[in-house]
Image 1 (tube, helix red, strand yellow):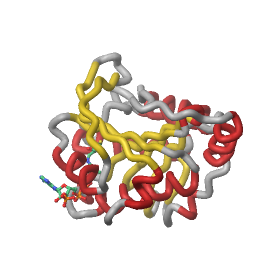
Image 2 (cartoon, protein in one colour):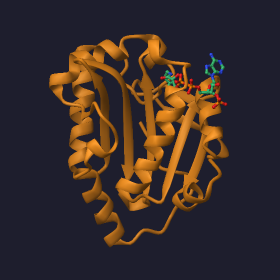
Image 3 (cartoon, helix red, strand yellow):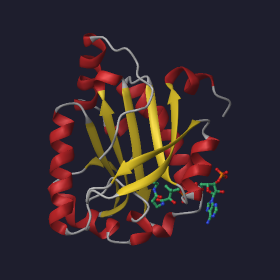
Image 4 (tube, protein in one colour):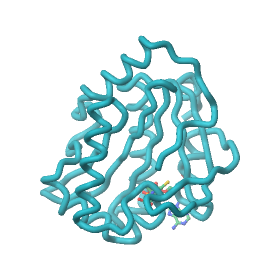
Length: 202
Ligand SMILES: CC(C)(COP(=O)(O)OP(=O)(O)OC[C@H]1O[C@@H](n2cnc3c(N)ncnc32)[C@H](O)[C@@H]1OP(=O)(O)O)[C@@H](O)C(=O)NCCC(=O)NCCS
């Protein structure tokens, strides 16, 4: 279960409503080709991605165990949250296969979002994750209008930590992340504001 950022921003009712509307009406074609909202029709292809432990094991915010039923329920839950303006579950598709996913959890009343995601194992460690994460972070700030993004990674997730540090996120200690099965995963924790993102040195 995702938790909102440690830092609390003051958010007006107008700003909160604007963020909810931006999430509900987000145009994924502006994020990139092959991007699609997750639907039940794509559940089997999504299961094919997530069934690989090299993809799903490092991620706390995924259904556990990963089965067709749990993936369908997860997709439904994300879609319900999307209609409230609080989530986007985005699949990166190619020739009917799901090559990766991004889950953007949004707290409109905190003007904040969290990004999590993964790539198919055959695409990992070749630079795609680092490039994709930076692109998606920029998109979240620009398209959804939030003022803060927080990220977490397992203490031993070296690749995630490197790419998050490289993007200029501020390390802010650790936190406990709660998995779907109720177990706790200790995580590294980072934040970045929209202003910091705009003024960072790429
Ligand atoms: C995490 C993930 C998205 C990163 O994407 P990626 O394409 O594999 O990573 P990149 O090739 O862009 O490399 C990211 C950084 O790790 C480094 N790296 C790559 N492979 C590495 C390896 N085997 N060991 C150590 N460092 C490695 C890269 O040099 C890069 O560091 P830099 O930015 O300082 O140059 C991807 O590996 C993945 O989907 N993993 C499984 C799920 C997961 O962990 N999701 C993230 C949860 S927070």
